Image (tube, rainbow, N blue to C red):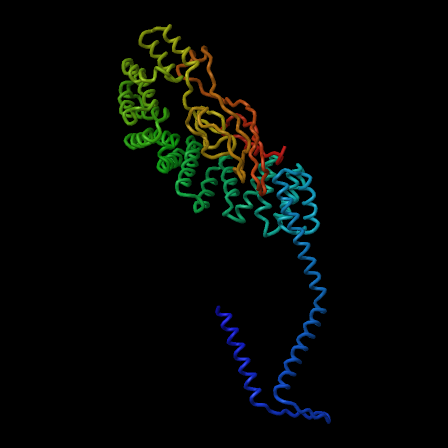
Length: 514
């Protein structure tokens, strides 16, 4: 509306000016080189305007002629860029769809028309991964890593390729370089952190965690620091007990429900004579997460105590969580040691209808100790063979007889206290490696080890569970549409037996599509 009004005002002003000049005619005389020109003011003004228009037209025409080579080059470059963009777009779509032939064709077109374009380099790398040409993929990622604008992407791709080859030292070097260049890169920080944890470099892992503190939420930071401090305390326990004790106490403060930290800190406090502090710490952890290790430490707070004294302590601990099976098991074991058979039976009474293995074996011990009834004891042992499994430390489909800070797949704080088959499901494909490992196929399923009757009879407690992973048919992987720069469908490798300090396992990356 404002533009229309302004236009009308301008037209009106011009009309008034022309009318004013028409009402006041004048004469203009020009004498030049013997020529005499006489005309009116209106005609002269019109001639000047026409001359200006002709000059402007001639100037535009001359400028267009002079600029035509440049305009032609720009047009051809723009057209070439549009065709290159179309080739890159179709190539990336073909890669996501798994169409190797179309991806090859479009990658060649993009490389020919825009060899230095970042997306063209990415398409070349993706096509090489799809075709299984690792050398070409490595070359494309190295080309990207040599450029400032694509260095992070190139290092990420080189990291993935190195893990695929099993070159863990190379993968670690690429992750370290990426983390130095850009500390905000989550995959790089996570990869370096997990590598240091897997190799037992807890001091370096803690330092890196402090450096990345701003990128983590408070709860996640506290949990990771507590796990690392617990692992460091376990490593230093034999060589530097003071430092180990300080680490364990800080870990228990950061994560009161972390059983290994509370058990280690409580035991070291008790050994130093700080019984009240140890009891408070164990009680707090027990209320958050009842566990047999906590009950054992609490029972043995005073070295050399009689069995009845230990029973009193365990009774007080069991009252904190009265309806939990760990309370019943701890109380029954302490009562059995103190020869309070009635209390032991009462503690287990509510679990006898569907006993777990530990409950059945405790009942077998109770029958032998109280009545010397070998027949009833063997009956309970036979029930233990087919009884439900008890919780144990489980991670990545494997079980361990003790807590470990890092799983065989390189994941920090992966071990959980649960029944082996509970909560195991196929992990979803991740867009970045769970650097160091991102599994896309189903993990091996774990089954609890079933002891033979002879083995159960030989031990008073259930034997330590070992690896029980059985290969299962792998379901079809869900392939996301965008994968930069990782493969769309890495397969999970069989995980080797748990070792507390072992060489980092292969990342398990495979060809993008089989």
